[in-house]
Length: 426
Image 1 (cartoon, helix red, strand yellow):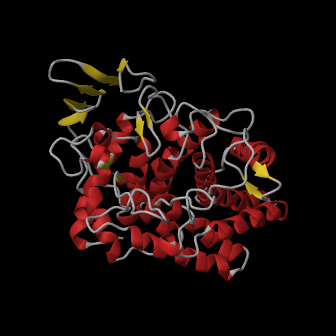
Image 2: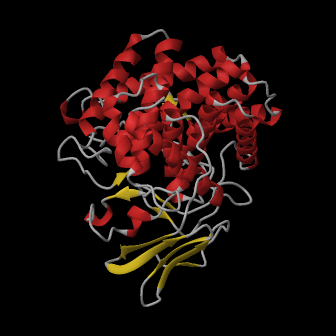
């Protein structure tokens, strides 16, 4: 499927080069690397993460296999699912699952996003003649029964908490939506839909209750159900697949209407040059920066997973993303950290790539151009950036990532495939 005829070749090339970059980010246990996210930067830990970075890879490989049913794509899926299984803890949570707060475990919404993707991939393997490892069934059961029901279900609110350590009077819609996806898939896979029903219905009602009904954020699923909470385009979009599932599973058009309202909010957050505003507020102007490149891809893939077909309104966002691929095959992380959007020397946080953003781009590229590209070529990067107001250079090769001043002062030095950087002063 091509969004625009003029981008077809670009998508094919981008996918091939990104595949090579991901191969270079693999280590002994999974996909490694630093993370700069909306809440912080995990630069002192660069080991494997078991968070939403696997979703885009699994979805991308499934798209590739649909276009060209080669065993290699199924092999990749099986290998990734085995890696995820080895990262599960006794309570059903996963180690290093907090994305930009790694190496913490119990990440929300990252863990349910991970497990929902795993369940979709498990079903895909079965549909394509592979017998899923029985360990995947135990993994899903442990996550649902041990983590979701035992630790995160809030009996008073009849929805799911983000953590078990605090008393709650609110929920996080993006996390709840991902859990809905898990429970529906788990119920179908195990024939336990009836047992899942009260939890699904409770979570579903909490999503409807959280949606903003009017004002500047009309239609948004906010980052929290607390009154006055802001909204983020990616986290709002991530609710769309769950709303589409609920429309069908509960035969209730309220969820279809809620999804249409979320789409209206997303249109209001789209930037003319591509990408989406960083955060929207009810009582003050939106914060447009930083615009995460992977988040733009994540909005589009969430629309696609909820049944929306790509159209011309996607074009500015796809072009915004493709312009930001670098010589290594990676993509810029963001635009506008430190108020430096479009400047010759961007903030270092705009530049350092992360698997947990690049996977969303991989998923989008594979959706729009599912046939794998031919042999790709990647190189090295050396770019001027600003680190705490000082001029430095970001350097990336197939072996390492570095941030170093011309004077020789090293801010960050990481050898790929290792868990800890040799130097991190960020």
